[in-house]
Length: 175
Length: 163
Image (cartoon, rainbow over the protein chains, first blue to last red):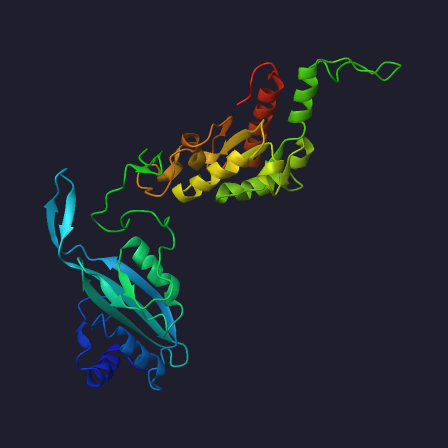
């Protein structure tokens, strides 16, 4: 069993380029920041190394950080320009009884992350949901499409600047 | 309605209007589409079970819209589901009836303001005969709704077109 700082040190020596830093400011948990295109390598290492052995992806969730610049569009609605979207990975080791949280941040205009589908199959539907709700694109996912909303839906409903369309297939949406 | 309140005579002949006979037959065997959407469906299943016994009114769940007379919209209708409900409704033969069960199917319920994915009332897509309020309605309320539908069917005439 290792604490999160020890795990960070192991990762930092193994992947000096991929591990971007550690965020200890939150009262709840320590978060390790990873490069979005190297998350798969790091994940494989975390899963297959004997002293780490993270065999369960408990949760993968997309987050709209809403840290960009707020601007008004032609109709006077709030839009967010710039800033980041994030993906959080909560990992658990059943054998060694330790946990860790990873985070990748991607620019809002080009939100691309490497998929971890082939590391933990749990991430299949989680990644599709993060795409459906927040619009994060996972590269090299085998069946990458919306999971909850209809395939012809426009926009990503859980983004902070989301504006509901007026009609869907002729049905009025507003109350 | 002049059908069963007259006693059978010696020759076992009952004289009734065609309207009354057909209406009586229809309202006594409302076959519903076996179709549940959300928590209202749990109450609908409870209504079908032995304690409340939907079957005593002739309500039997059928598994194809082609054999159905009624559809109970039991729960939250998402926009994705609304397109499918419309198709199911169009596959049912006339005369067909719709009971909208619970706040969500009536008007969107708790999702009325922020439910980006919810249809705010099934009557925006298909015509509703009876609205049953509640969140979810108790089985007694659903039975009341069914009795209201039976009343509606009882007053129909073959001379004018049904919905």
